[in-house]
Amino acid sequence: MYERIDLHTHSNCSDGALSPAELVALAVHRRVELLALTDHDSVGGCEAARAACAGTAVRFVAGAELSCQWRDREIHVVGLELDTGDAELGAHFAALLERRRERMQAMTQRLTRAGLPGAKLAEMTLSVALPTRTHLARALCELGVSEDVQQAFDRWLKRGRPGYVAAQWPTLEAAVQRIRGAGGIPVLAHPHRYQMSHGVLRELVAEFKAAGGLGLEVSLPGMAAGDADRAASLARRFGLEGSVGSDFHQPDLPWRPLGRFAKLPDLITPIAARLEP
Ligand code: AMP
Ligand code: MN
Ligand code: MN
Ligand code: MN
Image (tube, rainbow, N blue to C red; front, side, top):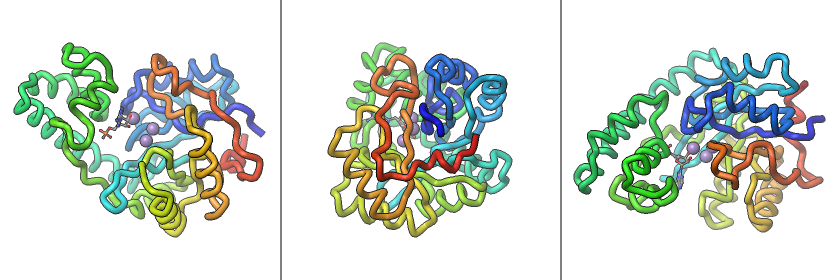
């Protein structure tokens, strides 16, 4: 079995700072044995990451983190071991890329109305592989509007803030189906971050399971003990396997370190057991 596992990471093919090859180099340095690249709504970096893993001790898992919607909330579902050539998954991602570009235009127009240099922000953020609010936050920092990414979100980009535009994501069922259709393993990401009551979270997990979900993230860096216990008991109750990942985006955010987090609780079946050496 693998000891050091990271099944949730980002590269600059979405809103991560490192290229897929740089991410793999860091994973090698941290002695990660099993690494999934799970960029937001993209498998664009998987080929390069897989190539970079060849000849190293890192076993690569092609993945993605799909944005979706459940009862008006934004939910993330990680798909592991995807067939990156699956046509329907490709069409799903192509449609979302178009929507993200339109959303970025709308957000920068809102920021213009709020007195910020929206045209400049659009120019800075629309040239990337997949525009996200993280790119917009970084651009706000680069222009000196905000001091750091967190401040940019809090002041401008969070729901209810001047730059926020709600996104229309596909349904939870659609995301799970696209992942299953591409031969992948659907894992409900970071349940503790949805700010739901226990009862609502339980309903989400039940619907995820009914839609064909197989795993739940139960161990992430910085997860409070209570949240980890809650996730573990949900996994047990609904027969979901446990996944672990850092949600790594960039090396200068030390609270999301690649490949470093708590082990799975004993009673949880590791989803990694499905990922053969
Ligand atoms: P988007 O998919 O364009 O809405 O961007 C979402 C990304 O922004 C997430 O994947 C996170 O990396 C980041 N993000 C979302 N909310 C926050 C927040 N409140 N603070 C910092 N980063 C955030
Ligand atoms: Mn992100
Ligand atoms: Mn996420
Ligand atoms: Mn993520």
